Image 1 (cartoon, rainbow, N blue to C red):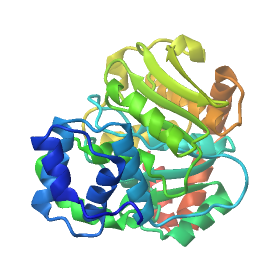
Image 2: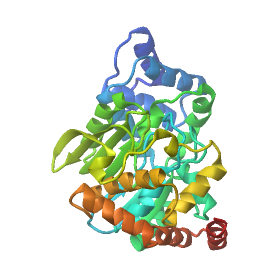
Image 3: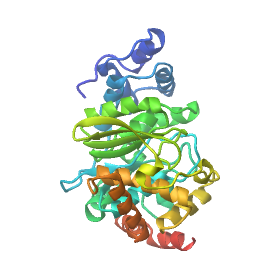
Image 4: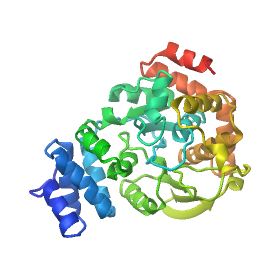
Length: 359
């Protein structure tokens, strides 16, 4: 913990709120260290999170806080030399749709991509990645050794944030009480415990894209897509313009994609939205995993899965990746990956079969 020095969270609050100055990298690290080791009080944590809302953190501050969280994290070290991809995003978008990032992880895994999915329970939507996987019988509390085994044996593992970032427990109360999106929405997708070197990262705010890209570069993520849809979604959608930052072969490019670029029809926004209930989310999730379901939602999953397949080096272009994603769903390969994940994680296979048989 070489960056920990005599300054800490109290001094960081003073500098951000009173002096209106950005923190040095060492100061940001020290403040986060105080949170992670339990030194900071709930009041100090709440004040620090609000301070970071009043004066948004810059790239050095975010990178330092990511580094600190990684230092405290439980880690996994998958075998193999190929790309490892995560589809964890920030959450917090303004649309109510299905859990696309989790479906995309399963679809990409079914297409041969090695997936280390990082995620948590829902905060802003009816059904977070942990909620939906738990519903299907996955042991979301699997410890690092088991998750590592899942990835090595099946090509997909799920890392539940509270298990892999136990020090986050000190911040959970203040986060809930504040009731705002905080810096932890930004830090979560940047702190993959398997050090994934490929990522599809959706953001709820277009203004976050440059910061996210710079931090992923700092941590040597080889191929990433940072995505934002103009309708306020942290996903690619087959409606309107999708703003994308891609790093490939050492370069970061800004691009705009529409449904037609994926060989898919434009949808209506209303066809992508579902009622705000866990039951409806699970129903649509299951339908798509079985290779059917509403066309607009199905195509949204194809688009995001295609990005993960490209990041995982299983396809060279978008149309090839879409074809592989479609095959993964329609052949049952994505569904088979979920079943394998249930078994290898030590989950409940009967629960999986019951959930699948219900729809």
